[in-house]
Image 1 (cartoon, one colour):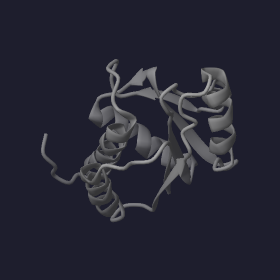
Image 2 (cartoon, helix red, strand yellow):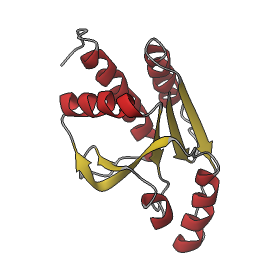
Image 3 (cartoon, one colour):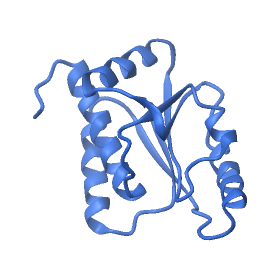
Length: 151
């Protein structure tokens, strides 16, 4: 099972549509759960990160392999990412991806991670990044199943 925990919600229809399309595609391979926790907004950064961390922690399981999405995380090519997903599932039944809010993620959440992952040194809108993450998860399954997919 793959779980994606995200801070904030998506309001834009085109992004919701993109997420739904990839959720449908991924469902052929595994169960997918997307959990949204409230973005604390423009309160003081440290306080927002602490409050968001408490909400995120409620959704973490003891057996989850936790991957935090961080700009300074490890970068992979799509085939390397696919191989990483494949090898994680050899010993783990759940992978949980965590996408932070406007301030990122608290150190307490980062410290729980088994892997700190980055898709780029660029900063993406968090709502758009969800679609990008789901697309890469779908691509990983296509690669791991030797199925064709556009390059």
